[in-house]
Length: 357
Image 1: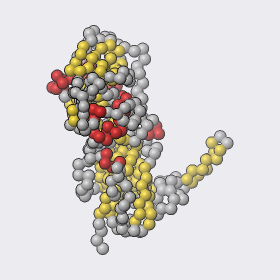
Image 2: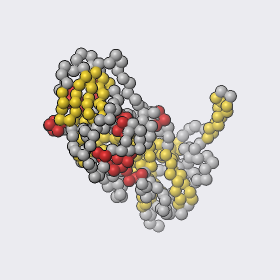
Image 3: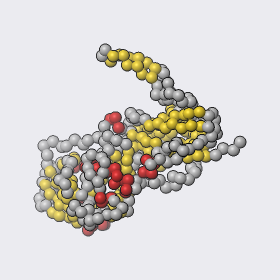
Image 4: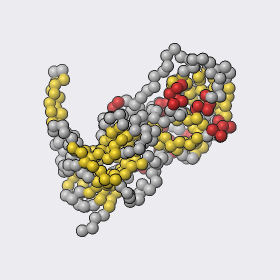
């Protein structure tokens, strides 16, 4: 009996990713190895005066339980989020880059391209700089952008001038340790100067090949790899280099949202038959530590199939694809989580239910 290959239909969320060749059949896939958990299936412990009952995720769920499911696995760190999606996200999140709708990322832009920035603070002489005149310093970078409390929502190919190039033009006074990029609305988040330089912060004026324009003065944006989006300041009007008594602390990702993972599929309207090859796909991102493995469970978390992501870096998200098949009809649920180089397992796993006819 011949087997067919099915790719679970991409949902609206799946449209966020435009990975090269994502719609084609996957070749040269690495085998995924199943690993068993050793913990008991349930336990009771006491906290203060309360008995806490722990049990496996799918212990009482009406899904078929498949242990140690094997399959083929592929990953890459390519793909960008279309600018209209970035516009929608930046218009609904809370701070900084995301504080209000971002007209400079709209398909039909208004305003002008303005790359003038004032540089001041504890330097020998303040100056105004036109970044367009530093095209010899221009760099292009594929970079992820992620909120401190939310899912991985953006990755873009950005072009701009390294912040280090601008700092190198300033005659700093002794002891300068802080940098603050202020937007046209006065918003600014102080950062340790050394941190911003080590992260290779970029003063961006093109996103996914689109020149940024703004009606609020400068259309330059600050982007930093492996840094939460609250520091991704928009419409930068000025940069202040200052000497502070205490170096500001850098906000990190909330521990609850470390090692974030999403499934970019929907099983709505899809019919799968026993023996069909089914491909699941999604993204993972830790915003600071490389993702070293994506793990899948089809038995409510009793066993996990671990798929290594060797060579993945922390500055970009991981696009993963897992292909397997099921020989018995019934309702199934897949859970997926990620693991990082520093040993963190996704605090929040993602799941998808589907039916085999």
